[in-house]
Length: 272
Image (cartoon, rainbow, N blue to C red):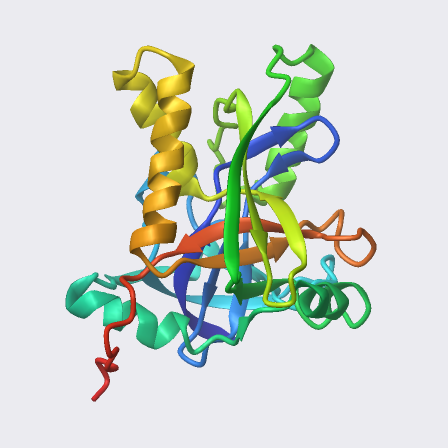
């Protein structure tokens, strides 16, 4: 089938010794239905960087039978048409008109049960009642062994469907030295601490690294960005499950995107 999808979440490609390359590109259609699309509609890192969030794409997709998660679809790269990028004009109303058609969840237990017990969702928009802390957890960034490099290369070929008509040049990106985690509380008081895999936050690290002298300054810059989203904007979390964790872990979700329109001051849809 052919679908028009607005790219809402785009993660930073990261390496994991256990799960090889982890990357997610997801969006919603005009009705607010979520789609996780494989492979990403780009062949190179440069193209991936150029695939901006809040860009409409039109493409042929089909359900990924190898992935039980209900929103996972394979995309025909040759069919992809890049359309307009939705602007921030009118207090983000044009973006909100589409993104907020998706159901906004407020209960962690509900979405975990929907993912693990019912296999009813693996992507959703979530609104915490409180944001508590930002954490940085150090990761092991040692050089990969030759065996690991080979495994990652093969995994990348599988992930991006290397074949004669699609030459994949996509390379694993340099890992960040630490994970950025956000702790929050849902409307029933349940707390959770999740990794932020959002492309924008990861790219902020490299931007700050070019201008800041110390690691503490970089962390402070990332914290300030997140605190700004929390205090000055209306922050929603785009949550997604990892394929390897879906259906069985206590909490299979991670933060794959951040949606932070201006605070609602009598929001009026741009459709009227």
